[in-house]
Every structure is written in structure tokens, then in C-alpha cells.
Image (cartoon, rainbow, N blue to C red):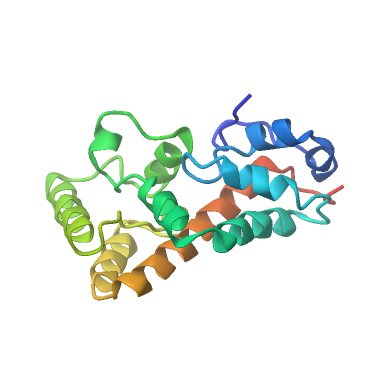
Length: 182
């Protein structure tokens, strides 16, 4: 029953709190790229009083994890407009998010620049460039990548984890019905 935040019918907060641990993990498995263990950790924080507490549980689970696990999570994210996108191998969440920023409709020059930026990121940090594309447009994504290439590896790891928490928050909001939160 793995859900995609891009296609799932949102549950009420009351229903989220009532899910069994396995059902909660399956429902929220796509919140963090290929990392359902964070949904499993978030499930232990129930009951939640509001949607922000759910998002915070994911952020806190990542922050509490080891550096090596955090690096695996960062590396689980696809390159923006990269080979996985071209091959149709993105998660439903990532495909929807990249399309929302127009990354599925790049000009040849923009596509080539993303290739250069992705290569530079992998060379310098051994990580993909991670950004919450739903909160950006093409130009701010390009500008952010160029600016963040000046980061130290430690700064970039922190920046990527911050962006991942922003991505996770939006995905959680997609999965929980808005309203009175009950």
C-alpha cells in the first residue's frame, strides 16, 4: 500500500494517528526518497496534534540519524533534470515536483547547464544538488546551485538536509487533509 504523495487521497489527521505502524510506514513511505525507515521512525511519535508535528517527526528522525545514513538519504535524491528523469525512473513525487518547476521542459542549453552543474556537484561533494523545487523556479534553482557550489562539504550536507526537510514537509502536507486537523 505504498502511497505517492503526488496521487494519494489525503487522510485526516485523526485517520493518520489511527493507522497501524505498518500502514503508517506504507502510507508515508514516499515522503523521503527511497527511505521508508524515516516513516517508521515518525510513526512512533504519534499521536500528532497537527500536521506540522508530522512533518517535524520526519525532520527529527533524519537529524537523529547517523551521518552515513544522512549521506545515503541525500544520495537517494535524483539529479535535477538528470538521467533518471530522462529515463522515466524518478519516483512519482520527484517527477511531479520537477515538472512543477518546469524541469521537464528545459531548452537544450538549460539541459546542458543542469548537466554541468550536476557533474560539478558530484565531483566536489559526491552528492546530488538537492533543492525543494516546489518552492523555486528554474532561474532560482540554477542560481542556488551556482551559489552552493562555493559551500564546504559540511555546509552543503547541512543545506541538502535542510532542503530535504522542506521537501518532506510539503509531501506530508499533500498526504494529510486540510481542515481542523482532527
